[in-house]
Image (cartoon, rainbow, N blue to C red; front, side):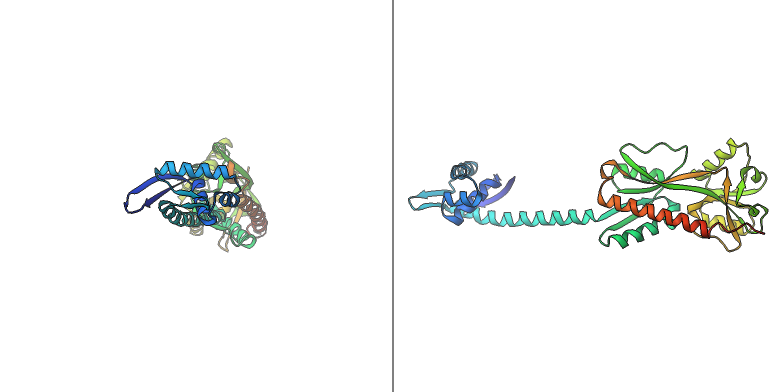
Length: 330
């Protein structure tokens, strides 16, 4: 390790700007404290020869003698004492800098940046954050809302630590250098008035949607594309009458009689009292995954988040079965 010191020597205040080896400086400080080369060697747990060599190297680097010897022992020259004085200050500052760096590292180890896809923010992420806070009060979670595609890029460039994202069947595989853990599958749901004829069963066949006015998420959304691709594969021509920016707007449009809505289950954190949710048949679903960079998969913070996500997903599934799928209308 090297240190830059500015030293004023004697009556001629010349500034010496030198790269000083810290071992040399330690030897000089201990020699000044103990009054001998052997004393400095004992303090530093090295041989007297090693101390002498380092002090000579220090003098050569500065171009000035820093130690004088006599029959009574060794001591610092005037320049040496100036160097010791500045060296002690520099070592104190270096120690403070190391402590500050360790404190910062400790803070960073207890903070994670999380990005979540939009429909997971209301239903899933709050449960995860609550469980994390219950398990580790020191672990702080900063989160942002991004599309799943944006989350992958943010993970790869290091701007977020963990991503909670949705993957559809035709999506590309996990990005390079990323590790993924699947939590479960989120099905598209049919939102319709309780008195609607399609609410009489617990699932709605795609073929039954022929001619029925349908509200779907934005035309370019992954859920919309996945729904339309499945319809095409099943030979169904859906009558899409509106594209909704979010589930709340879709519910309001259903309430106003615009049609029935097709939305991801996670997006439905609530429904109006006079509405019900029904599954689609065949199933149209997406995988919900926790993603991180491969090298950070075993970090305690990552593992804590993943465990909390698994537990929260199981709780979400249980509650959704009890609360959101009311019995068929009769």
